[in-house]
Length: 177
Image (cartoon, rainbow, N blue to C red):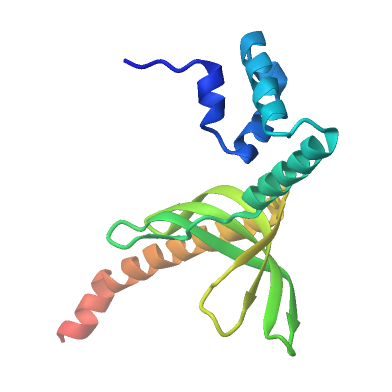
C-alpha cells in the first residue's frame, strides 16, 4: 500500500483543487496547511486575489448546484421517481416562446406525489417537452404542495368511486339483460 504525504498529494492536484482546499484551512491539519501553502507558493498562487476569485467561483458552483433540478421522470412499470407538479405565477414571452413559472418537484410512487423535495422558479421553451431550466431554488411552497396533494387525493377517490359504480350490481344487471 502506497501512502502519499500531503506534499506529493498536492503536487498531483490542479490549481482549482488547491484553491478550493485553501478556502477551508480549518478543515486541514497543521502539516497539510504548511504543505498546501508551500505548493501554492511554488506555483505562484499565493495572493488574496487568487483566493477571492476561487471563493467567487465556488459560490457560483454552489448556486448552480442549488438550481439543478436533476433528472425528472420515473420508472414506468412501478411509477417511482421524481416529477414536477404545479405551475404558479406563469409568465409567457411570445417573442422568445419562453415561459417562466414556479413548480414543485415531488418524489412519486405509483405516479402519486408523496414527498415534496423542492420548489423552483423555472423556465422552458414551449416548443420543447418539459425541457426545464432551473433559475432559482425557492423555499418550499406549501400552498402549492397542498393543492397538488388535494388534486391527487381527489383523483384517487374519483377512481375508487368509478370502480365502485362500474362494479355495482345495478350496472351488471343493466348490461346482462
